[in-house]
Length: 106
Figure 1 (cartoon, rainbow, N blue to C red):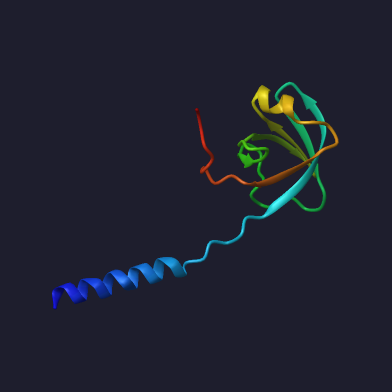
Figure 2: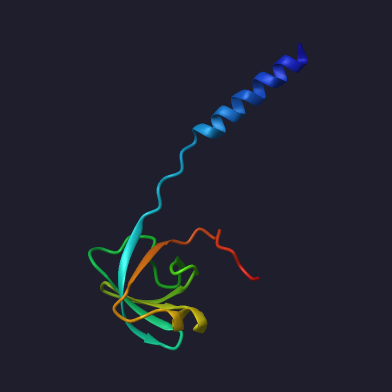
């Protein structure tokens, strides 16, 4: 009897865990207008989402650059020098909210 109750409780938790939906990440496309060593300036069309704040991190180009400053729809991001060297002016850069799940290190 106890085994049956445990199985039912576990099934309920499993179903409840599967039913929780994760909201889709909002992606904002920006255009790179300037690259200065590790600082990349990006212009975003339209209104900036609330999660893009000065001092916060965003996810872009396989990394998590820090937002150094925002002026209107223009933001300055600090990448590592290696990642910044791979970026090109006039290319599109998708930005998503930083969740902290990015891989770090080797």
